[in-house]
Amino acid sequence: MTLNREQILAEMGFTPLWVLRDREPGVTSTAAANADPVDEMPPLPAPAVDRPISPEIVPSAASTAALPVDGLAWPELTRRILDCQDCPLCRQRKQAVPGVGDLDPDWLFIGEGPGAEEDARGEPFVGQAGKLLDAMLDSLDIARGNKVYIANAVKCRPPGNRTPEAAEMAACRPYLERQVALLKPKIIVLLGKAAVHAVLGEDKPLAAMRGKRFEYAGIPVTVTYHPAYLLRNLPDKAKAWEDLLFARRVLREAATPALPF
Ligand code: URA
Image (cartoon, rainbow, N blue to C red):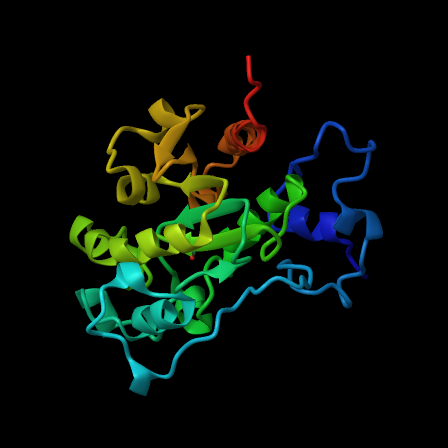
């Protein structure tokens, strides 16, 4: 038996699928409309785009360890992240996970930190939570690598997937700051409390921050639940969907020039 994409997501517990209201009934996405059989379906990430999605990385020998992070271009920044030993998380990682996506994005999604699969593959959100994140992006008609960049508050896996400690997030913060400065996204969506803490320095409950517009470095910021939380609390997926629609409204407002009167 071959399963189409909707059936696979349903099997994984990612239903109900999120559907844009202005889509034709029964069509959940461009990908779903094509209804690829599972044997031929590529992993959920991303259509090929002609934008730069993996920056060049300078070799270790040309390490820029003496330079401040805030002056670095992508190749040097990525090398610094990969070689980083600024906090104890470096001791147990297989590799650091800098981030992935379009280097000229509208959207920047920031999660907590790599899990086991991300640590093994060097790419953020490639495990179960990542599949849900891809489904969330798909519901907005956006895809990993196409006007979207995905990063984490910490670039190295916290052992046992525990929440990163404040000191670990602080050690990693210059990398995130430099990524934001280079990416200049039109909106930042923070996935879960750790990302909120890392970027906004807030420890309020997420429920109190949803549906509000914050700002970081002049860029609008919104918050929603972490996909891993949503996998454990399926009813809250409806709230996350509301949060994404809110984020899209904020993005559109930010992209619309103010009227001169
Ligand atoms: N959870 C995160 O916060 N980030 C990842 O990259 C994977 C899971």
